[in-house]
Length: 175
Length: 164
Image 1 (tube, one colour):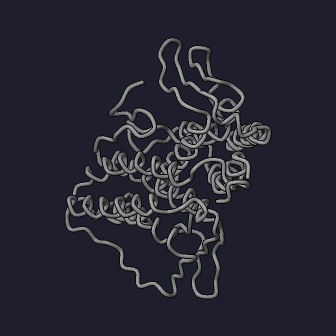
Image 2: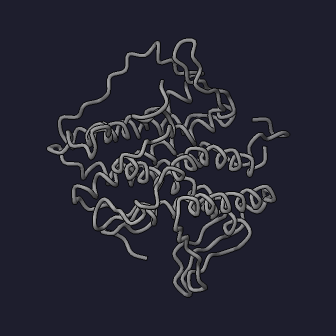
Image 3: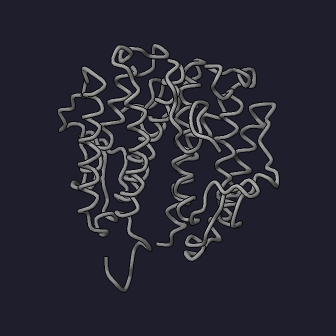
């Protein structure tokens, strides 16, 4: 970033690290509570299973290096295999590795990288091109939070205590 | 790039799928809830709609004090629900458009009289509100699914709409 014409008024990397650490702490509390015997459960035939939704949340933290270290993600070039955790401990362990790597990459990304464009495509078909800062905020962070919100309903429907997220749940936290 | 620009882009983007979801919630489902401890469909959808208006008091005021009263949405129809959302979104956009960078470093409190729940900056609370919105809208997407209401594309395709 040029010192005379700053493109952003505050450090995006630093603010994203703080945000990710906070969101990850709550996500971990949710994932720790997903019992392996419920991994195949789903609330509706069209829904993701409990296990798949949990591992999807974990893998999404790993989209941080994919976003910041590349100019695009091309599904046509990907050999994607969803992580299928045998146990809750495996799920949490996978999550911890994804988060640690994401934070490490954020810490080592200079601010000017965040204004570079990033493209999501499937071969010739382009889904979007946006600055990396927007990709991180929306496609990664808000998207993780979206699925974690879904997971909180899965916990509720299985009578598993829901942790306090942004405020108290019906089970935990108080105002 | 002014700080507000990022937030204006983001709220516009987030509003598209949210409005689509709200438009699809029939008033007959307003009292439904998936679990006795859950919010009702009306309460959750009303909260999501209302949150799009929170930026108005987060930017134009220095605090929100529950002790002074807060008007909760109480839609009777789907149209009421969407109208609440539209009104709130417009108010937030107006406040954001008028917000200079310096506003975001001002302090902001959430309180109930003498009880202080949150004492932070306007930047932090605005930022967190986007996350908080995505959280409750995520919950709402499961409510739609459970009532067999088609789920729109949100960050990517749903099992009903969109393709990749």
